[in-house]
Structure formats: C-alpha cells, structure tokens
Length: 382
Image (tube, rainbow, N blue to C red; front, side, top):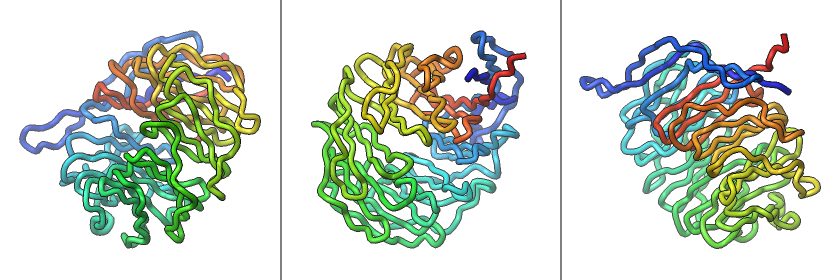
C-alpha cells in the first residue's frame, strides 16, 4: 500500500495583534518538497503560535488549536478559520475535544469546562459548573449522550452535553484525574489519576467496577479501550502493558512484556485486532496481535528518540507515529515497512497527532508551537 502525502493548499501563519490580542491569519503560497520516491509533500498548511493541544473532528472536516487562551477552529478544506475565535477563557486550556457528531467542541481548562458550536464559535449553553479546580481532560461518548471530565479536585464528572446537566460525580481517586476515556460502545468509562491508579466505571449508574488497578510503580502513561470493548490496556513506568476485561474488571490474560524501557504510548486499531506500543528505551514501536498476545510483526525502527504519539488509520492497515526526534512516520502494519519518507518540518518533539478514520486527514502538533495539517492519498502508480 503506497501512500502519497501532501499538505493542503495553504500556509496559515498565526500572529498576535497588539491591539486586539487576537490571532490573525496570513495565507501564503509554498513550494513542493520532494521527500522520497513514494511521497510528494507540499508544505502548505502550518498554524504557528499554538501550544500542542489539538482536536480533529471525526469526519476530518475541522480541527481545533489552542494559543494564549484562544481556541480556533479551522476548515481543512478551505484553509480558513470557521466562525469567530473562542475567547474569554480563564487561564490555561488543557484539553479540547469534538463530540462524535462534530456538532460540539468542549474546551477544558483552569476555568472549568464549556461547550461551543465549532462552526460559529458561539457558546452552547452556560459553562458547566461542579469541578472545584482546573479541568485536565474531557471525552465524549460515541452516542453523544454523555461527556466525561476529570480535574484537579480528584473527581471525574459525567454530563449531559445537550442540557449541561451534571449526571454523576465519580469519586475515589486521591489525586488529580488526568485522563478519562469511554469505550467505543459507551458502556464503560476508564479514568487515571495522579494516585497512579486506573479505575473502571459504569457510566449510566456512576458506579465503580472492581477495585482500583495499578500498572507499575509510578504514573500511568497511556490507556485505551479496544474498539470491540473487550479489552482495556494501560501502560506505566515499567516495561509492561496490562490488559483487563472491562465487563468484569478482571485481568485479561498475561501482561505484554519485552519493552526495553517504559511504555510511553499505546493505541488499538479499528479492524485488525492490533495494539501498538512505544518504548521509551530504544525508541521502537511494537505491533501486537491482541488475540495471540504475540508481536504481529518485527519492531518498527527508524525513530531515534522516544515515540509519544501514535494512531492507526484505514482499519489498521496504516500506523502513524510521532517522535521526540521531530519526525512523523507512516507504517504498513502487515509488512512493517515505511509507507513513505519521514514527514519533517517540526523543529522539536511531536507531542500529539490526530488522524481521521479514512486516513485522509492528519494533524500533528509539536513543541515548536506549530500545527501541521497533512492530506494523505494513495499514490497513483502512473
């Protein structure tokens, strides 16, 4: 599966206007950059002056960026902001997330959490009140009927995003809640906290499932549900990935071991029953078969610094990785071969990336304060 990659046809440079303190947009042209026999990359979409927090609408039509207390939503097709910038946010924005249908954008930060219309930039209802400290994380269920948040007050909270009503307050963590994740069917919620535990919840009742779980001594680095909802994976300070049955809360087989260092990231594929894990020791990525619990292919090598961001696309045929070495790489998960030359341009670590299910829209964000928007297409052999 050869892949051609091109940035969409614009470059967007964001600057701050001294008079309004609002970002302004400048569009410029760019030059094609040849990067390999199987790849043509046109460096035409760069958003500057952002802090690495990004969200991509599930259909790939919009993405959101954060800079200096302002959130902007961009059209991936037109290369321009949609609506007005979201401003007036108190303190730092820690997370942004689109709802499953793309009709809402949640903004979480020091000042709490609020919902916005991404097309217009207008607020949707009043701010959601309840947390007594900063809100660090936010997630929507796939049905859109629930939204979860986690904060410095040690609670996770479940909301009805249509009305803004607080549905449940989940207590038990003894430190800040750092991550909240719904299973794909919305029947389970997993949370991690500064107390270094993983907890499972039944969202409709708000009740915990089983006892708190630990991965290894130290913090939990990554956590994800399998698409079929039958596995919850989490990694931490050790070289182990632990798996649980989200229905019962019990361990699901033996842990995955063999990493040369802490497992910094993990992600499940949508269709091929694969789990990718990244090692902080040797900067490799391992793709596992979740049925056999054995490596599906040889370790993916090429990055020379730790990999912190990963996403599958195209049903699991394509894996995208972003590294502290500043590059983004595309991999064929059947052969382990690189699909293209590394995508370059970031001048520091790649902190996060998002790709839509079809694998046609990729957004990467890095420590250099830039977001890059890529358009991925199958290469035409002719």
